[in-house]
Length: 283
Image (tube, rainbow, N blue to C red; front, side, top):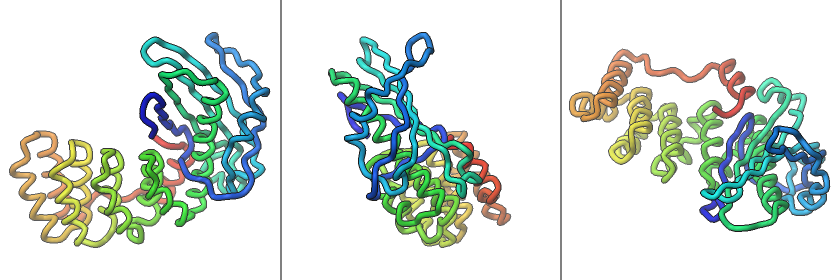
């Protein structure tokens, strides 16, 4: 994520994020601008300017992308630009993605820049989202590994969601490296993925991190330990259930301990549930 004066926030409606992989750039079929009254006006004059600066993408080469954006200004933020890009999902991936795939970007800028420049930045990020969405839907493990190493927390989160559903065991070492990520959402998802690693030795990594993270990831840590099992995990859950100061987290620890003892920890999503979530998009 970029820091102010340029802050880029990705909001994925039915998409994911990813880097470029070489090839031709996507084809922008059209750009529209949404006005304050909700009406749309044609902004196709921007197409050649934006296209000229787009990165190459093998996954999106020749794919027609429709875009619209809305510009707002305020004394507190300056310019706020919302852009949405959408494509038709490839026929073979519609079972997982749905008929249309969209990605949205919110760009906030305190300093002055041309509207075309900001639309170009937002379009590039949205296309990166769409590209990786397609790659992950094809279970491209190389792309998933690249995303896990990305500096953008949003990209890492999307890769972790794929790992959680598709390959938590083989990606366990890469996932373990993310449990101390500075973004709490990344840390929580990494811990959750490790819970499916089928290797109790990862409990030690989770336990070490559980003492440093906040409520949400702590809950995931307890649940992950219940899934992993083993004496080290059980010992920590017993300690947490007896000594956790926060009443909500203490209940989570007690619940995780019971689940671990009866051998019925929280299950993973079924293939049908996974397909439904992928078609619906990022939560």
